[in-house]
Image (cartoon, rainbow, N blue to C red; front, side):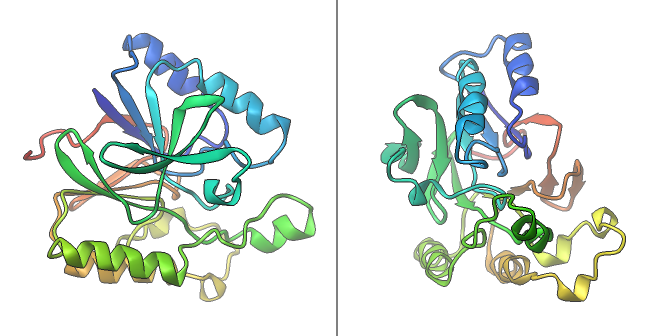
Length: 236
């Protein structure tokens, strides 16, 4: 089985309980839609979270969020492997924790699936002022966007499933906006770019996290605490 959920922020205890309740094995997979918290502090606290996640028998396939370092920026920890028919980043000490590569196509349950991570942190300035980690490459770069567009173009803009951290702008759940945040000063370039992708793309389901909400609208699924069966009801 393949399951999917939203941000866990360095606390995999609910997923551990889920894995125990559902008797998951190494043959199962849980997709986490970003902000796992496994590369947040870049010290021992991250390792503690990873050690707890390593007790989950299933494979964890993680999308890159905004509040975590990209595995590619940590070559002393991560190396590239091939899984699900595409490249992933993994750490020798924690082989069940995989990070998807932005723009890569994966075969998950027989469905073509593209990963597109990253988003803007509305608390970036506060983090910098208070010595809390903030990562300047949190959003997809121009090169990453170009790669994703090239990959999709080569597939005639057809893919079964999209896994992203944030969402296309038109689907932004405005009900989650924090009071007092001037939205005119929020960098929404990633969401606006995803809008252009969504406009052109033929797809069946789009999953995203980031917004701390469980919500379904059109073919978009926002996930936070809920754990769902991946691509339930989709045509293979």
